[in-house]
Image (cartoon, rainbow over all chains, first blue to last red; front, side, top):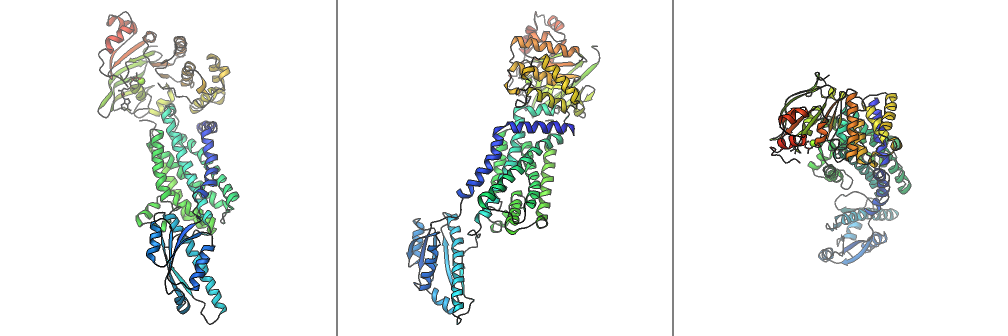
Length: 372
Length: 248
Ligand SMILES: Nc1ncnc2c1ncn2[C@@H]1O[C@H](COP(=O)(O)OP(=O)(O)OP(=O)(O)O)[C@@H](O)[C@H]1O
Ligand SMILES: [Mg+2]
């Protein structure tokens, strides 16, 4: 225990003397959380919309004016044929096509049901996809209004439905920041935890100071614990900072309470730090460590459920996400922030993360060699 | 004093893939002696020393250090030795005092011991004014002397010094050897590598490694006689000329 005290003292001294680490720990969350959600802002305005109106009815006119007045769309073309609209997409003059079939009003009035077609430009897929998501929600709104109108005219049935056929992308219109900010915070925590730990230990290998430690009778468990504790605390500080920024800048208050987030983060950080340790046992130089963690980070981010919903991934990718700690934390964050889940609701994820922590850290300890 | 073996090495070998860095070396080191471990660049000195310190797993052969087996009791060995690596490896971002405190603590020394010993070393090295300066800011000669002091801070039975005076000026080298003599006088066995042949003359016994093998081992006087050379420099040249390795 006394050895541990001396080792911890050493680590804390070194960290607080390293301006780079402090900068990373305090500036990175601030900058990323304040800027990134805006820079990577999917709340795109001026989505160029080409409408193929084959109906030319009063309802189609109403729908179009509702869409343009939403502020998100810019009507760049108003064509009579789908082909003409498609050309607009090819010329990059449109991100999205909305086709109103010839029978739109007739169907709506007669059959209480009408079909619209949406097509998005896949070249700027994000814009296309998000545009469709916005459009869907506007159309649903329109749908409600029409129904309300008709309720006042009782001869029509109130169940009128406009069905929108479009792929089921995520509904980003309302809670986009609520959804992104906690996710970015998770990525930050992962990066800070895994990278800093890995780099820190590998740096000792490169400089040679680890050899001086390895030639002492110090137990490797002590050495590793002394490496973990400071970064665990720093991780929780980053989390606190991040939650503070989320509150101040985006008004995000986790409905499920802070305790749930902190409990999960405490275990999550152990897992992520274990990963950093593990990387450090395999890497001989800082470049190697960076490369490995960069590679893992890419997978974690892309298969983490932040930018692409896990449900829409192919089965094999969904299977990989189960081994991705990031996906669990993002899920938990959403549950806690959006749904108001508490500790008892995240028991399963917490248990899984605990297993992650145990496995990764044991692996790292076993793989750490005092003798080559 | 010179008859109790503290290090025994018997056909100790280290291979890296197909390359034999240390080739079945055999020798003993006696308690209290200053043992010079010479050899040209790449001869295998560091590799041999790291095996004895429990930092590198031997490929074959036997060795004991302070009575403990290098294969099975390496952690026991570590309690009884000090090691100063070829590359300076104290923490440059810790102060002089903090480094001593850290290593004293790691070896399980009491706070009182650490305090007294630190004061003693600062006095001895004339580093009192630098006690709270970062080690990285010290000149090389001071760093090397400090590294040696830290290596013997916990008063080990043996200290392994890997080229402790490499790149250091002649005055500091002399001061360094004064410290080595003092440590030896306090009963610490010294196992030292060097490329300076004047330093070899200061050793009780000297071994000379060529291409991973120990080619000669005796007192400097006997070696000079055996190779009919006026100086150790000459002895070394005669032996090392046979080397085929160029070092790294
Ligand atoms: N980890 C390793 N893997 C492969 N080869 C190695 C390794 N460590 C050392 N060697 C090789 O073993 C040989 C002996 O190296 P060593 O460092 O022991 O020599 P040395 O006598 O200490 O040399 P110097 O005087 O330059 O310090 C060299 O050719 C070196 O390249
Ligand atoms: Mg060497």
